[in-house]
Length: 70
Image (tube, rainbow, N blue to C red; front, side, top):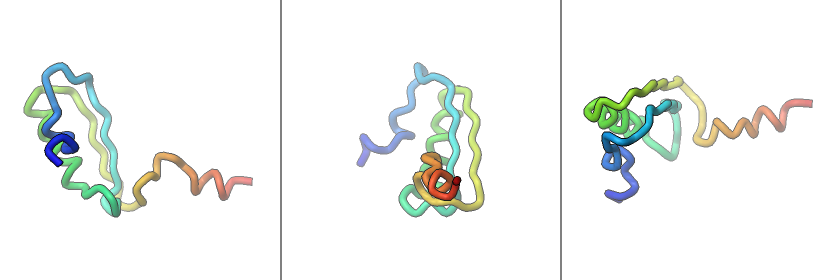
């Protein structure tokens, strides 16, 4: 589990990051993203972090939009 915790993998050599997550993600607790953002900040890695109020895990695949678009 240590290896899978992204906040433990942050080094000063990481590129800038864009993070986003939904507060209602049922697979990845939003707290994990906060920990990752904190680790980036501690290493002075530029990042943007956005938490959306709702949405499920995998929302970025837009598969619901694709199924409902004629």
